[in-house]
Image (cartoon, rainbow, N blue to C red):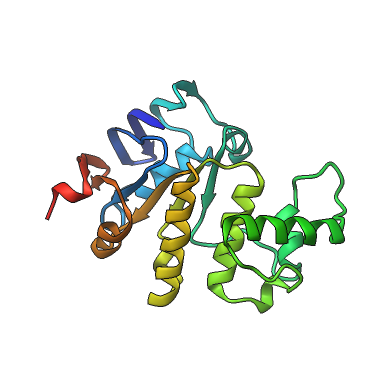
Length: 222
């Protein structure tokens, strides 16, 4: 992924100013900065939820212009938002496959089989037949990652995923993210927690007040 000279203005506010950075295939790259630095706004552009006012986005060397998150998904980009996109009254398996078929009806048996197979393949253990309203926050997050994988994501955006997790759940999530990296997936990780950056990430791009302060190898900074 490469973002070149990205600018974003909302009425009366310049949110992002000339942001450029690139992400290597198969790395965990953190966007680091305090609340309001522009991290989520920038990633929502990559996911097709917001259009840049100016600038270019390249995915696998090809310039792209997304008008929706569906278009971003078709290019292999998945996003796990802070607020999960799930229907609590439906099961984990139903949520996994919802919106991917031509019919509005879900083949429940097939959905459960696919959910269990995907969960096994990636080591993201979920209870396929339980209602989303009855599972833990950590399992709901795993479901979001599985949903992205089910839709073919190779590039993941995680927006402050540890904000809702206990320290033990955070550790487990990091193991799963390292496993995804080993399988060749690229991960963009939004955070402002320095200990997480040290524990998980390869490189960081630092944002402050809508501007980039540069990209650094995690090991190169104290």
